[in-house]
Each structure stands twice: as structure tokens, then as C-alpha cells.
Length: 115
Length: 117
Image 1 (spheres, chains in turn cyan, purple):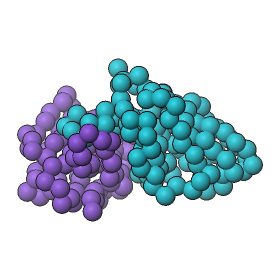
Image 2: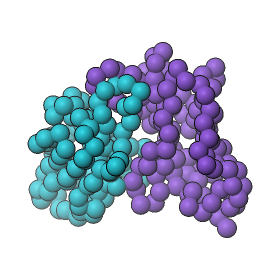
Image 3: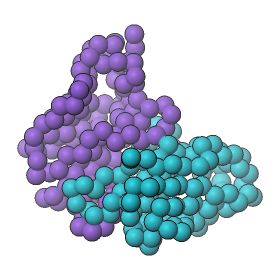
Image 4: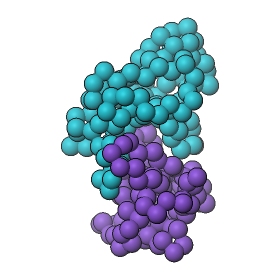
């Protein structure tokens, strides 16, 4: 079962709001990822957690704060966002073996609109 | 540094036509992995195929086929007898091989495929 779930599907928030995006996988994967995708562009990596530790932060502004409570869950806490942060936020997971079985599986995404 | 180039921004075909999506990559690694993902209008990135750099066998899966040529650093994707449901953005991606850790994907810019009746 190659399924990654994300909630909510859509989110509208004001620039002073605090909200969280959630991602869950039950494939036994040990790496989880957050990507940001603007319209007509490829996904851009934001964060990677490997074995529940933050292993990559692609110089993301501090108004985005990731959290990995356990190996199945990944959150992205949002605070004081800007309108230019409006995008599709995708979560992915993989085995974290780095070997030939290493494939990232993506969730359906959260469409975020910041007003 | 790794790079993936998808020169075709947009392709439009009529249903039942065959269509090939091009992907050219650059890497200094001797071991690496190549991927194709499909992104329909709903937004989810759907994994289609992975190819390992040491396995140049081409692959066919139903109406889909992939042609991996290391000599030209290309990994092209062909849809035979296209259907309207194939309409989507297709991304080619490359990752390095790093044992025991998460992978990092380098995506191409994507090719938007429009299949009409």
C-alpha cells in the first residue's frame, strides 16, 4: 500500500494566523519530506527528516517550522506567512536506504492560499 | 551538480497518437537513479518508474515504455495510443545514491501533455 495522506486538502489563512499541515504514512518508511510547488514549476525541496531527525533544511524561512513526532507523522507549522507562500505543499516518504529501492512516494498535497 | 532537462514544455496530441517525452540528465555520479512522475490536475505526484544507472534495459508496462541510454544521458518516456486520461504534467527526476539515508531528487521542469479527442 503506497499511500501518503495529507490534511487538510485546502487551507486559506491570513498573514497573522498560525496553522499546521499534517502528513502520515504507514509504509514503514524512515524518511519524510516537505516540498513546495508553485504553479507551472517543479516541486522544490524544503525539509527532509531521516530516522526522525532533520537532515536537510533547504534554507527555508523560519515562518515554516517542521516537526516529526514519530516515523509515521510529519507536520509543517505555519506562522506569519506571506502571500507569496501560497502554493501546493507536498509531503513524500521513502525507505531512507539510499539504495536501489529508494523511491519517494507523494501525498495528494495541501493547496495553501495566504491572504 | 545534477541537472535534468525536459526541453518540451508542452505537447498536444490527439487521442490514440503515440507521444514521446524527452529527458536528458547530467551527473558526475557513477551510480544514480532516474524516475518519471505523473502529476494530473488534482496535484498528486504519481510515481511511474525508477531506473538504476547500472541497468540499461528498456522497459514496457502496458501502454508505457521507457528508453534509457547512458551513452546520451537520456531517459525518454513513450505513451502508445494516448488517452485523454494521460493528460498531465510529467516530471523526470534524478537522485544520487547515498547508502542508508534519504534521497534528494533533482526534478526537470516538467512537460505538460494534453490529449484531446
